[in-house]
Amino acid sequence: MTPLLLDRLLQIGELFQRDMARAFEGTGLTTARVHLLWMLQQAGPSTQQTLARLCEVSPRNITGLVDALEASGHVRRTPHPTDRRAVLVELTDSASETMAQMQRDHTDLNATLVAAVAPEDRDAVERGIDAISAHLEQLVVQAASESAKDAP
Image (cartoon, rainbow, N blue to C red; front, side, top):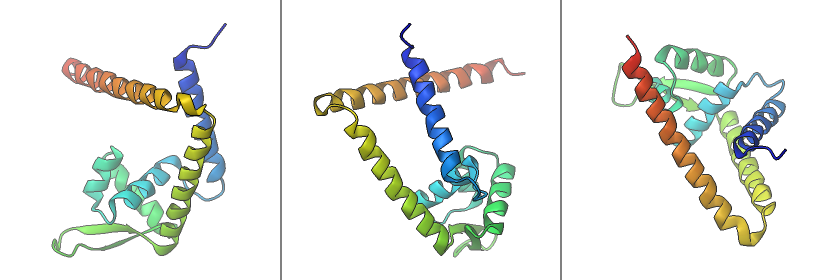
């Protein structure tokens, strides 16, 4: 029996998770911590409130993540230049190097995966993935909205 497209997508997601776990084994970096580092790499120094929004977690959760990453030497807190009540979270130099390497690895893996698809099929595959991603996002937002309506 041919697997459903959904089954293949779930398999791809699981393979990415296993590869990430392997890559960060022994580093103390969890998926959530790597995600926070990735957001900082993309956004630059940010307040914890901004990071909580970007990572879609609670302020309490982001505090725990930042505390752990600060303790491991991946991030530092610095005074906000214009708001005395706020602090900025930024990557340390070593974490910036780690994230730059991760970006290079990300780009290399992308090229490897694209190369697995016949050149004449690449545009169609990209359009298909974009369509699936956009529709799934729409379904998730719709389900969350309906769930919020049903909550007491």
